[in-house]
Image 1 (cartoon, rainbow, N blue to C red):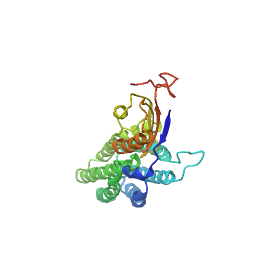
Image 2: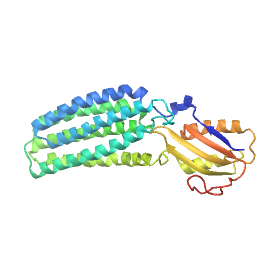
Image 3: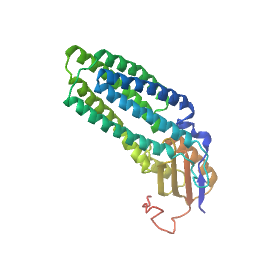
Image 4: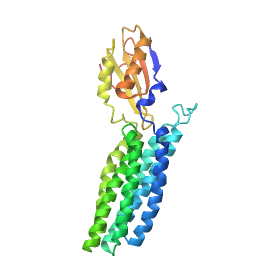
Length: 313
């Protein structure tokens, strides 16, 4: 006789760091500080005629938008499920992550265009202003990165905020060095050249986040979960002879769901088996929502399930 078990024991969700809650204050501080800093960088970049400062300000502005979107999505994800949105609004965090990735690379395109123009038409740069503002950026971005450090391993939104701020801090170090070189050497081409380096660093460092958010949007199994290991784990459970229709997908950037059919001819103690399985899936793989159907023999439909997924013994 088949059994359905829905592993929705929210008491265990502390294994995945929340995208809000403890990070609400971090989002508030991060947005406020970076918004003030962007305003100062734009003013200083125009005054000092520095494309490096303007490019850094453009990226910092995209970070402000990114933090705001991530925070808004995490607040939306806390809303209760409805009859239509049966999983709630957790998927908003994935949509926000995808939008943030698109906005980031759009901003990089505009900054690249401006940098090419400055390289063609170099102009004098106010070195002390560049170094002073970039030095302030090291403090602002470093502090903001520190706010998100504790949650960056469990949620792609929090990790994105952490990596963006950490990257910005390192970029600001590069701007300080570039401003000093221009000031002491007079080589005007160094400023847009450093801007190119900034664009490259940001683009490369953000690529993994872009790839991961696209995968989440396509409902691919999270990179942190080895699907083959999960299959082996299920096959090793007492009495299980085969596994089919195994699906693992993200409900949000921090919650993962699983459905599977387990062929278990000796179906005694089914409830105890399911309870232990739910507990172990959460602690071994951080899968917080599981639906498992137990079967005492292969289903009549044969070797193909709901998505034509082949039966694996």
